[in-house]
Length: 387
Image (cartoon, rainbow, N blue to C red; front, top):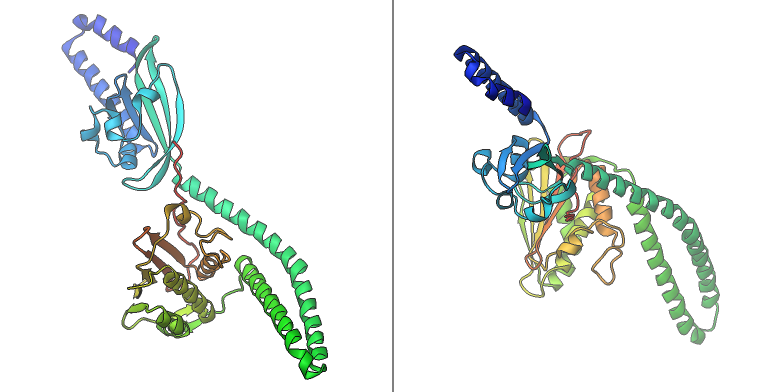
């Protein structure tokens, strides 16, 4: 209702018949109920705040965003209901504000709020806050950025393959020729030259391995799927790592599901996935009492594979860059291992989730669908605070 209508109503209230007054009140109630229903139907949050910072109205969307209950929030200071908002700074007279913020409860979301003053003939009555959920938009932006990075890496890979791959092949051929000439020398002249030749070959092999890892990360081969036993692949991987695990006195605990059905996957790729993840796990373990837990589960829709350790964990600043190429905490690492792992899992329409707390270990969860699917649920964006 407009204030002019209310003023006219009050001015002639003594001349209005009781039945007409009742009709007017019913109209007011209906219009208020209609507006409330409109606000309740909005996906955007709406909060009406008086000039003292007290909440006068809050719709269900805003309650959902901030984990509030309308009956408890109304009449309370907004700064007490949404901790982290400084109402004194935000509510300066005549000031309109648009800001982004991150919330952590009840769900990790990214929001944008627009705060505007409500005035009547120049007199401040309060503020209206409109809140939009940007979580999906930010996830799409993260996905676009990741796609752009991978496209850039793919272009770089083509140049690397040409500029480094060809000279390496040429060097290898010339070293083979040198090896033949060295074998024709007198026995006393061979040892020193053969040692230098062996070192050169090892360095070429190392460069070739790095090049292949890089190319595999940005241009993964298509998965060749077949019916496989996930447990068998895990056991074969553990057998390969057994000498290193034994030398470090690492206990491996198996919690494998009984009657696990076969999975349609590429066994070679998944052996590489398990190899990389288990190796990462034991490299983060303490010198004593190191433990790795391997667990498998399955439901009607998916396989769940967990690799958990009691190692040093991952710091918050490194958690945000786990899948970025060449970002590594290891002195001899390439920073491509997790990028390769994620690409392979995504080739199988799966997902990888990593949870870690510094000083308390890391938990990696791989989700694989039991049947083909055409969509993949994306993980949350990297948390950043923008206040």
